[in-house]
Length: 355
Image (cartoon, rainbow, N blue to C red; front, top):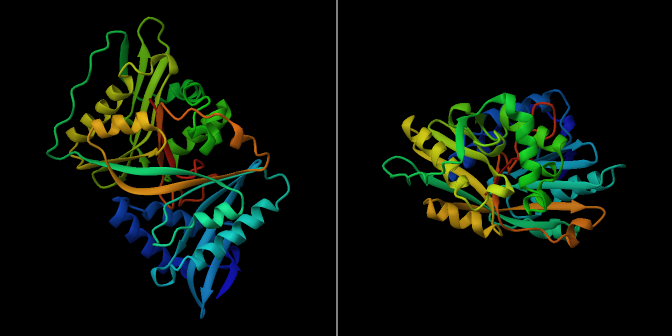
């Protein structure tokens, strides 16, 4: 087994791997991975995607890639062909990626969310490199033939369709909603307006979390002040399968049922358009969001993990709030398009919720 620089490979060398990965995403998560796979091939052919490939007997049997974003590194994916998913190949690819990133001057943080389809856990590799891990859940709900809950009436709040003119205010909403929350330990883009703007740009314009669907995305405003106080963003990840990429409620409006109403509005619109399934992801420790989703008849499709390395170690001592919003992953091991590049899902394939 050889571990080679991914930038020396061609897309043809990964074709069979990406096809296998596409089938797994469709079978296990009802997700069409085609757009993410096409983007990976584009960057590989441009010799612009840093990472490593595992080659056995001249055949590529696994790959992993990463990108840099200022002071931060993002591991976009690690995937190994079924016959070689013994844990050792995945660990060797990850070890090379992690050591390269940790040894890069100026890199102070590494994030990833990986949808590991193999039977062997990969957490040991991350823990040996001093990463924190966070349990995550990929949830789904059938829409066809399943009655939806009635919206609760709130005369102080008005819902409106998504409008891109509110993108900057939506970024401010994200930073307020996730302040001190455990999801901002997983994705530090939530901690600043600039980071939240980048997160929204990736959700709205790039395929990592599916194709954004403005018709099933909504904003919530206080009637007395016209202040933005909530939103739900939704994408299409496969024919008639929607994915809620973000649910976010202002702290002053949390606990009022606004998050419930926003999700119901999105589900009703998806159902009207004959979608048969909707998915989302949530951090396992976010018990209030989990209770809400269970109430709304969501079920767990798959458990996975997010991993974070912080050179300063400050995140380990932070008293994170585990309640409130909820978040989602994007395709490709939680991020299968080149996250952080100009044409990728810089969120590391996540979607979130703060309720």
